[in-house]
Length: 336
Image 1 (cartoon, rainbow, N blue to C red):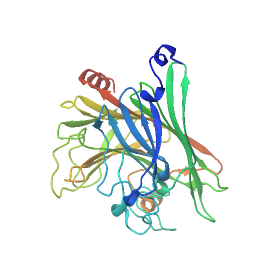
Image 2 (cartoon, rainbow, N blue to C red):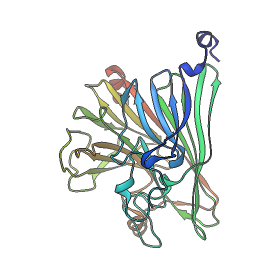
Image 3 (cartoon, rainbow, N blue to C red):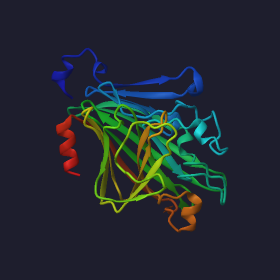
Image 4 (cartoon, rainbow, N blue to C red):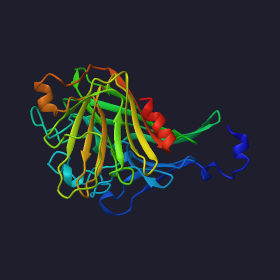
């Protein structure tokens, strides 16, 4: 531990810690939050009632995340299968999409709602922990998310989220396991959502080496942002041909601030750029995935759906980091 630092403090909570809270009113009533903060100025919330997803994220008081007009909604408020996705999707810094479907509603062989059911599943065995690891004070949350169906699938995510005393990085580690005796198709997309003021007309998105393909008629200008436009449709770009490790960066030189998503591509070989410049729904998504830009029905027909063998596991390591100042931004981008 850092004894010299501790001599200056009555309690380490002056600089870093985790506060567990609960919402009391509105559509998110009774939702629990684990609120992280540290000495670097990083603040974010983990939502154990929604797959341990990330809700808000700020750095030195500046917001980086997008929150939809729905706000943080209880997973019990609406059924994920009845077409009310747009009525209840909260946004937030991270929404975990899958494990039964990614993309639009699918219906062959069952009901598979838009972006799947996983983000609606509360974690079990959730807990938070803080401890010294050498001179670093570690803040950690861990839990399990099980997506199950009688006579059918049993897929789980064992998730760990952590940061440190002076870190500008959130580390996410997922272990995805198939507990059934049969091989199981699975789809997984990490829906990271950036919002104003990090997102503005001054923002740019750059990536490590990749091949980019537009996925709709609106999509013809990847990486460049604009001011919000009333009624504008969304743009969607599919990135393939990544190396062993991939990275997507959004930076705003006027704000002198940036953020990045970095991940190993062994089990997440692609990603999507979701660019929605519509007024009131102003958001930029960087979305690592094991999918091909199709929903479950179309991916199955195309033979492009991942399969997790019986009683096996895969692991994903993802970093969400902050870039502070023009020098750090330019050096990071130059080294992509």
